[in-house]
Image (cartoon, rainbow, N blue to C red; front, side):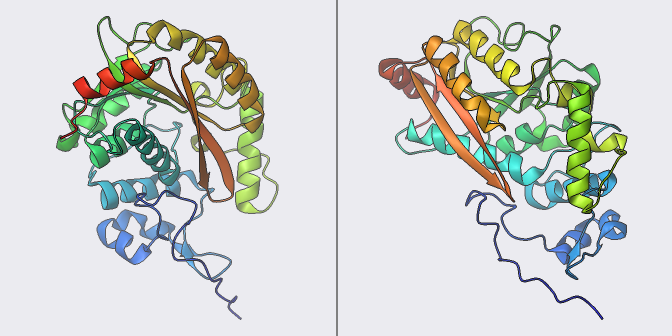
Length: 323
């Protein structure tokens, strides 16, 4: 006897209204544009078409088809063992941060290549720059400490003509630096975004991956697929998310006049208090906290600027199109 189909809402209501991934996956349409997905689509325990989200290859192919279906990216891939991020959550960050810019731009989202964004830790996947460029026309600088990740993104750009000239890549030579060696003298960045390493050690990262897989499979998993979690530098940093963001805050004040908004994802709510304290100590003029929600998970983006009202007005009036 087949299990009764579970009734799902038509939209994922926690996602941003402009997020193209808001509706439930229409596998009929997705399979039509990407037959490569066919072997991975099967009925789940509720007798609904789905994929096994604990299968790294299935998740990667789903990302391929979503990027093609929603954003017109025909050629996308990542090297084996590199992080394959969920697109809906990445898109939410971009849309919510676009709303933040609009609140400081007379209610209008600044668009076009004149808006320059820095993606700190672009990874091998290039997801943030792809979505930000396709949705709003923003130009991007993608920084990373890993030459393989940089080469992977270069390959993505070269094989998708619409991205050429819109994404510049810069290798960070020192893992302890975030903005130094990346932001050039007399260069202006409208927005810095970041998805910091979550864990504090390789052991903690592995334990987190095993918990995630156990939740997805609804049984205890004791061995992780090497391609599921990502590279060590993508998953963990000495001191974890807290230390990475504190370092980011401290360094950001040296670029107070070079960047309008600094921002970062904060996954652990317990880190907020110490981050707010560090921002106050660094004398950030304004701090914004933006809640994000994907599925059952809640996180947030913390954004800050060192520009006062006069400097903010000068910035938007000289750099952003407001006609």
